[in-house]
Length: 560
View 1 (cartoon, one colour):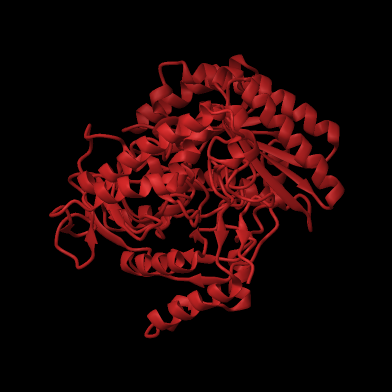
View 2: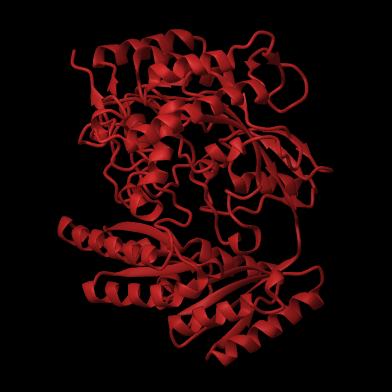
């Protein structure tokens, strides 16, 4: 397949006179050449068409798929990896900090205390500072067939940045954390992938610019990781997810080392495929994002409220009714929290507030005046009361609102503190909102049956909820693993998804065929094979049961 696709890609991407020099952020010239959208992406499109035809042929053929759809990937030997590291050291000899083989550095980048996945060390960690640096590293990786794993905020929960078992390059993007251009009149910003979303919003606020980036996952998440996982957060009910229109365009270094820009900076375009979204949610398996143009939203005054309910069903039913009411457009967030979360927050929350230990909802309202905020709160309180809601509490000022909301955003850390010395399995699913009460109730009953500590929180306004399951040993881990499997199965049966916003990584690969179907997953694999025929980009992540890798799920290491 690769041999058939390469001539197509070569002919499509190397037409004479089609390269141009341009600034990544879209204005003044830079030295590195970027294939224009028309050229680089037309080649990609031709390749994808060819891949689709070949994939269909393979599906229709009676020959076993594993013997023909992909060849077994073979990466470089340990000696070749060492040569690659030597080449990178020579290349960046004037910047010794760019290449690190420090053992602590390798271990730190291959594990996380936020996840149950076993850490795997990388062979080397590199710290690029520009798109040019990334291109140089990718070309060395190609030469020595060395896998590359992107790394940034380290907040991923499904093992997306864990090292490759056979060794590889960890590309730490945290040095690429600059805001390049702010276009206030256009309500967009051009930045690098290592920039944190909170840092971006703080910068806009400090400059007196009444705009913000509304996608709000974990506090330490960065723009590149947010794009790569297709994430969202508490604001999703009002502003949607990273898979919406918030990422206007991307600069991406493809596995070949070619640099493309997926679109211009205009607010909309109907020119061809939406190639930006090809990389949103791809988890670094198709290329390295080096620059992003983000759409911004106007800052609207907000306030926060909380309310308690007799049980989860009453809380979810109330939230559904609120989102069907006339005040739905004034609801920025509506968050489900269970009694275990309330108990954890009372002990380990970031504020001094103490909450009634019962299931409840946290709200964030938005409105252009205090009168509109007060009216929204009044209507929401009335609806909650009809479902048994009590103790409705509206923040009296901005400071109290901030403190209450920080308790919600700290849910993972306060939940983990419930079991000192333990580990946590944090997972999420999403279903149509009308199916959410049944799923949450069945999940709570199941978790109570196995008898391990847990908390449940959720972006209940769009049918997404998170469960944090705590355990101390391998026996308990097996109980947790089975419980998560049952939760995902129930979500898919209810026409939902195995992951609302955490991404797939290692932890959710096994569920993709059941959720999407073999045909859709096969098409995803064909896209991967076309763009990354050597399988260098974050191998072992996202794609389930890859038939181009060995049974360890990560590919083989060439014998020396």
